[in-house]
Amino acid sequence: MAKKPRIMARKPPPQNKANILSGSTLFYPISVGNEYQHTITRTFDLLRVEAETEIKHLFEYTDSPVLDGATLDASIVNSAAKLLRKLRARFNSVFNDMTDKATARMIERTSGNVGSDVKQSLEQIGEGISIRVNMLAPVVKETIKAKGYEAANLIKRVPGKYLDGIGAEVMRSISSGRGLQDLQPALEKHGVKVRNWSKNVALDQTRKVYDGVSTAAMKSAGIRKFEWVHSGGSNDPREYHLLPWPAGLNGGIFDIDDPPVIDKRTGERGFPGQLPYCRCTKRPVVDFED
Image 1 (cartoon, helix red, strand yellow):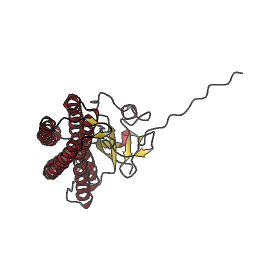
Image 2: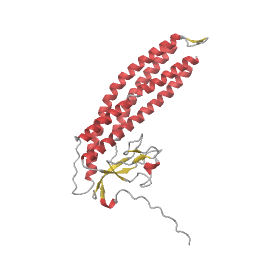
Image 3: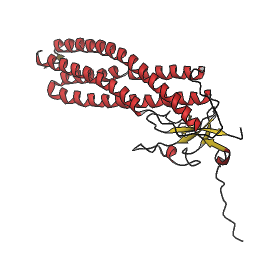
Image 4: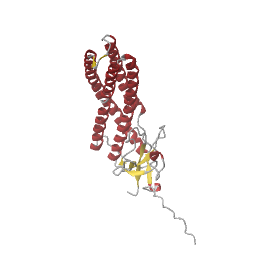
């Protein structure tokens, strides 16, 4: 007789959804992210104009950089190096001050949204179920502090990222002897690149603050599980995050204290929004079998 085909058992979801109740999905505040990124990119734009103006002025009013045998004209090199040091000091001073203030405001607004959003989400779980959110709980306060520190430090990398690039372009244009002919388009291209990076990082950090603080707020309320919700808003979604559980993460229910693998390549475990530019979110879950 022919052998019967072997049927592979599919891994069941962590819980039977008949035994659980879910709150409404948590979505990060878009207006907060937009305000944060606007403050950062506006400051960057002002400093970028200042830098490009001074560099252009340097090349227009300094002897043309030329190679004299094997020796590069030292005057333009020294002047350029001095200008780049001056720009770095100014960028760092202005950007650090702006970042601390903008991040503090972003943290304050995001945390306020988390408190009301998690409360409203838990109210949707079921009639007669009362769950209190404590935004002053140590786990929430420490998460807010850690996420704020992480966001600010990442944004403060913008001046270095920009000035390292334009510094290299300035010296390259001097050594080539072509001056502004090569430099102007290179400055434009690098400026746009860093501006887009800073904008995306600001939006991503706002999401990370919201997701981290909302998870901590859920824990403060005694919630121990969450359902993974794919946002559906990305042009290039991570397939593993998009596919329904158990082939992917979407719709899976997981323990907060034992989060799922979010990157199958590295084995990294974590939460929605943890990976760079991940827009996934979650909804709180009450499991009556616990």
